[in-house]
Image (cartoon, rainbow, N blue to C red):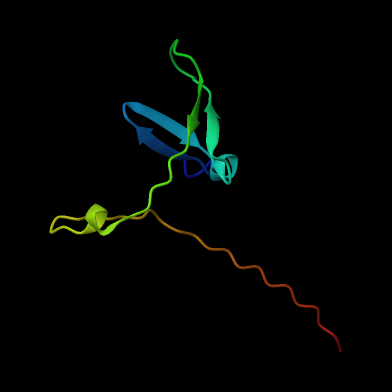
Length: 80
């Protein structure tokens, strides 16, 4: 359902955040609105993580990607 709505989800600790990339692109923080429960909404600083070899080098590493779709639009003006 998230993919259909162009949304993504990330887990930070025990919390899950649903977002659209356009809403956080270029921002160093984002305001999260609580939709379930009584907890306060909050502003979170977005961490920048540089992937280092120790993150992926191992004999039990597994990386997966969901389906990726590309769209190419070509417009051509024909003349006689």
